[in-house]
Amino acid sequence: MVPLFGLATTVGPVPFTDPGDAVEFALRAHERFPTVPVLSDAAHGLLAQAVDGLSGVTVADGGATGLTLASGVSALESVDGAAAGSDLTSPAFTTLHRMLGAAADRAAVPAPAALRLGVLGPVTTALALRAVGIPDPLARELASATVTARSAALVAAARAALPAVPLVVVLSEPGLIGCIHPTFPYTREQVRTSMLDPVIDVLDGLAADDHPVTIGLHVPGRTDWDMLIASGVSLISLPADPAAATWTPSLGRLIAAGGSIAWGAVPVDRPLGTSTESLWKRLAACWAALSSDGIDPMELRLHSLVSTVDGLAHFDAAGAGRVVDLCTALSSRLRRQSMAARLSLGA
Image (cartoon, rainbow, N blue to C red; front, side, top):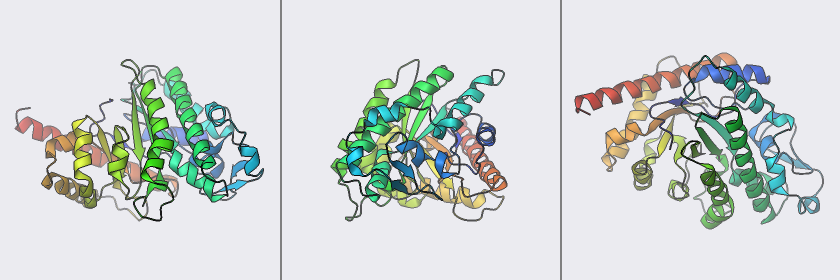
């Protein structure tokens, strides 16, 4: 697994419609752990990338949260989801290629600790397909096949451009918020066996000593972390909420196995000031709740990163810059305090 202690990171969507602006922002924002950015317009977002190649399925005009189905269900029954997912040549992936090229050209700059690649997860993709009338199990089958192939294709493209840089592939799953509720349309078994497991198994098979791949999962709200951590991911991304102590045993097992937690310590749904003090207090309260339930506080910090709760697409450029600055400041504070504590313990 890639050592990510104390690094700052952000989720992919950024407030730009020009690939060059998005790439410049991403490389400047977090030099040690940059994220391949996703443009704010629907045609280049994670949902558009997820369904790219599925005949007749397009992102609805005016937003990145819904789909339209032009050709009907029957046409999709013959679609090869794996072939569709393997193709990264459409305009939806322009920013990806610009990012990889720009990162490879920065020869004079030390290589980053890792590169973060975001993929819309299979559960969220399946839910979007269901919403336009595609029945199960076809929605699950298409989602699993395309996301699995897309994830593998992203790894191959990133390795070709940056062979020496470790990769972190993060499945973005906002659709899993509230999956514990009895009205959630999928069972635990369906989420794991027919959607998440195939993607994770393929990515796990791509990891090697000289080409490490860390598999992550981002859910920007409350979810069933027992189930998701058991899927075998090595990085989870969740809001910094003391309620996370609900999942202390699973979080403890993740840490004991060498995994990492990206704490969404900087909100994206409210005005932000220039001070990190209130954000740090909330993060510290979250850690205190977990430590009181039995997780070693030093181990917890040594396996923590600082992140935004979700993407930055709803900010303007200046606002997104302030969010990045807050993330960076929290990251610096985490690293500084953790190293000071280790020194005081004689580590």
